[in-house]
Image (cartoon, rainbow, N blue to C red):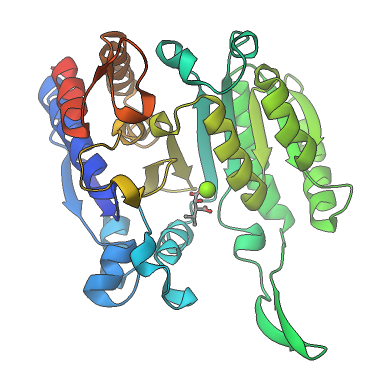
Length: 358
Ligand code: IPM
Ligand code: MG
């Protein structure tokens, strides 16, 4: 079977962590006899520097031709002053939209080896953290029209629109229910239906779909309460389904509970491939180019790619197992360093995981 991956290294630590992940991909190819190939395209600040725009047409075409896309990270202080329509982040939002990637799966799980890295009390952590945030990714206030700046009553004003069509809610709700069916069958819908009309439609749509999934225990939470409950007792959550903005915020919060944002992967899925995989963390410009960045979130994103895009579960598990072995052996990058661990750089971490794959 011939498979091709389009790599979008992007900015900051993006190129380093993608390079480490390619080592692991090579090891998977060797061990399982695949010939998965890669090609690289520009996105974000790197694309702005080379072409003047954060998402060149050539990049969209290269992604569309590939079977899956692996992204590093975009953005950095160098491009902070740039006109807002061509900010690096526009590249990321643009590729999600161009590929129709409406469903963002963000697992927040605690690696037992890293339990002491959590910021929560040990007795709370001991109850376990194994949450899947299912975030709507191509709608809501991020993309709603109208939006813009204007003058209102003699002063500057700015506005965005939070809008969801029923069909947009249905397709993400379905992913939420289906994901719950494969897990602990508990789905928590998060919205702000006590205030927002858009949330009232959202909730009614989720409730209507629940009839198709009698085995799934559906609950609802307002987003402010959900933010609190995540910290109070994260073990109560299995799958969370929510809109674009709430999901952006809650997935960072959920990730931080595990104490290791450098460990968490994500998958952005649509109706047809290619799908996109990227670490949850950003471009970390402060440590870029120093071989300090933890490549494990990107390596685990590759595992998600094998699972969701290629349906090669054995390979996915092998990658996850290799990561676990390296952690068990005590190797740590700076972000997850603890007493008694062996501090290694990103390069070494990539080599170690690739070796374990062999
Ligand atoms: C994320 C990021 C992006 C988002 C930014 C960089 C546009 O925060 O993937 O969560 O808000 O979706
Ligand atoms: Mg975010």
